[in-house]
Length: 307
Image (cartoon, rainbow, N blue to C red; front, side, top):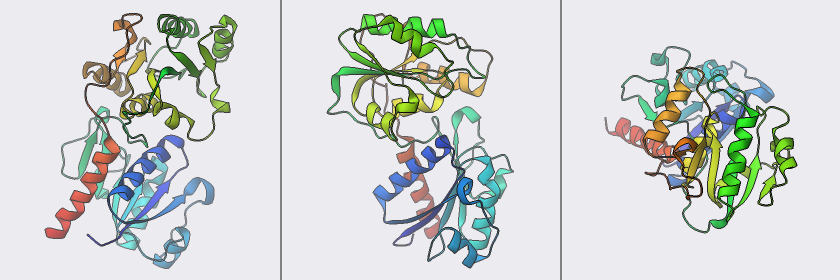
């Protein structure tokens, strides 16, 4: 492996995909000297160009060792860039194009990837969270809500009932409740009308960048609606004791299976099995997939070097 690991990251600008890429980039930078350049194709598009043109697009002075991308819109730019630059390609998802076109892939287990030395199977998607065990505020809790989705039935009244039950049973904690773009109108308003003394409401539209990351690293407990897969794994990765609000599954899907796996492994506590008032248990094991992915990629490079 070269003294400096040169990486070009391609993003489609979607927050979930960008979160995965940043998680991997941060862990690689923490382990080895890196030179990283980004291209957001949602902002400036992508031009098929030769090596000089690619360097201009990525504002880079040298060619990469790896090109990394997440999101199907990035597949063709990823493959073109890797081929022209002579770099290897890494895709952070189950690709929509044949997997043999990519040099490596990092794929969540709920997508049922095949067994291959070129594929790292992860619990959920990568994220930017890091496990935090100290300096948590034992007086604070967090509840984050998703909304209408294809995998779980969403009912505002049922979700509101659970939020109120948690706040009343754990009156020793002061809870911050936030929603998401998928949350149906009226839920936060109905919660506000209850005027619960130990609940603060913060709509997602009022949350500054990095707010959720900071909250998950600071609170004593967190509840997440189980339709919000990315937030569930972010909460688990942060090592905060995590609970999953109950939502009836609409069908058997990779998302519903993923959440069932989380509960079965003891990574989070389901509302259905929670005894009102009891503290949430910490995750049964530490999950830090971005860190594991960085180690896997670096080991892959070392293996190629000595092959």
